[in-house]
Each structure stands twice: as C-alpha cells, then as structure tokens.
Length: 209
Image (cartoon, rainbow, N blue to C red; front, top):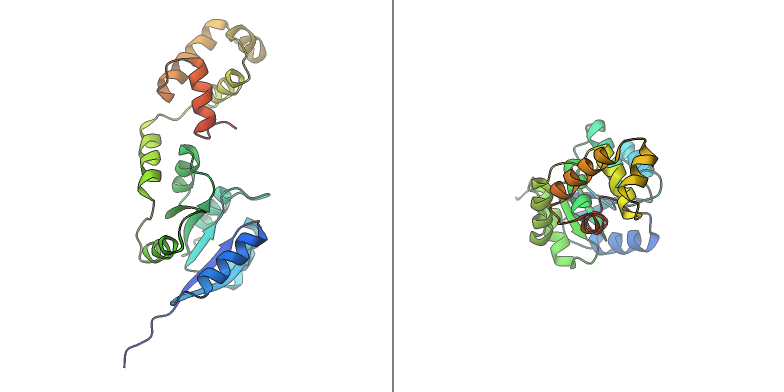
C-alpha cells in the first residue's frame, strides 16, 4: 500500500487580516497543503514556531514592529528548517536583494495567480528557489552593483531633498570637494548620468524612501 505523503505545513505571516484569511482559505483547500497557523507580526510568527512545525513560512516584507527581513534573519538564527517565501506588493531591486540575502527561498508578488503560488510553494518545499523571471532580472541587476557606503547613503538622502554640495558639506561637516567625490561615486555605483537621476533611481529601486 502506498504511503500517503505528509502535507506541506504552511505558516502565513501578514499584518492584514484580509490577506491572512484569504491565503489561509485558498491554500488550506489545496490537496497536500496544511495551514498550521496565521500570524499578524514577525514576533507572533516566532512564538508560533516555538509550538508548531512549519515547512514553509509565507511572509510579508513590510510589517509594523519586526519587518519581514528581520523575521528572515531571526529564522536563520533560530536554526528553523522552515523555508521562507516572501509574498509582497513590492518588487524594488533593493527589496528583492535584501530578502534573498536574508535567506528567502522564494519571492512572489501578492497579485500572483493561485496556480503559480501553489507551484512556488511546492518548488521551495522541494529545495528549489522560486523567483519569477522579471524579478530575477531585478536581482541580477542589483547583484552587479556595488554596495553604497553609509556616508554615500546619507548624501543620497540629501540629494533627494535637493540640497547642494555646499549645503551637504555644511550639514555633514565635510568639504565641498569631499561631497563632490562622494556624488561621483554614487552616480557610478548606481549607473546613472547625474545627481538628479541618482536620486530618482534610488527612490525607484527602494534604496532610500
């Protein structure tokens, strides 16, 4: 007699009740899936994992309190065997990069069709990575760019506010020349043509808010 395969145990983590209920009813009726819990925050998810075993954690990136990225990092520290899939409304290069760097095995948008979500959960459960091709392209692009330093990020925030090199220098207590060098590096790292484009690209890619 064939042994019946154990269901894939799923924990849903999202701060929106409607999303949690919708996902739980959609995934709970799938053959071979079992929703073992729903958590409204990263903290609640960790508490649930102390008493429940989950194979897949389906989580939102942007939640009040502990963010999805912090939850991914906590799961790694916890030594949990659960594999994480990020389910979000955002697909900026930086969001994808941070999530994958923090250990996410899958990355899906909330408007993903049901069949694709089911396919992604099965793939990640089987040990594969699941990132849709257009999001993988963002990721590849982001991996090719050098990381910005803390000082460069600081200057980028000020550029986005429309400050001149002189004003930035005064605010950070550094010379105009030093600011200019940082701006040149920022433009080069973001692969853009000028400071205005650098600020726009940084906001679009989620590097600064």
